[in-house]
Length: 175
Image (cartoon, rainbow, N blue to C red; front, side, top):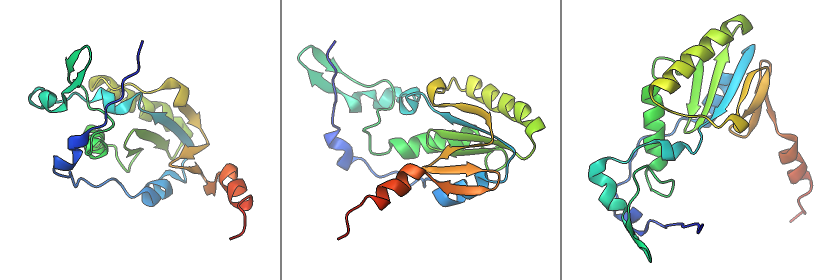
């Protein structure tokens, strides 16, 4: 089977969606101080968002086997991140900054008390099911005390930098 990759040359013609991504530092800080954490990653997240039927023809491309168009949002689209973030914020609106943090397809469920975590996870899973969103099980960790979020290690006591990043800096040649 051939792998086909399309570069969207018309991206510059699209108006930019100015929907802001969350401020990563604030989200990382908000994830600390919790007894239980679960980290989830959307399974091909962008591909879980349907393209509006009226916009499908705008994604058309030609191949030797015919003309095709995307029925789901392609990661190469200019506004894909903003569209996905907007959808996730709408889906988890009542949970955000309470027991959920969401940065595009990275989702953290956080519970101040370990005994509440199962209940918090159940609410998130019910919401994911309602909107037919799937997570990548190989990139999930449930009910842990620490984990990686947006490139940092977060836990109840605070934030740490990954050792691999420290090692990379230490190995850099002097200018």
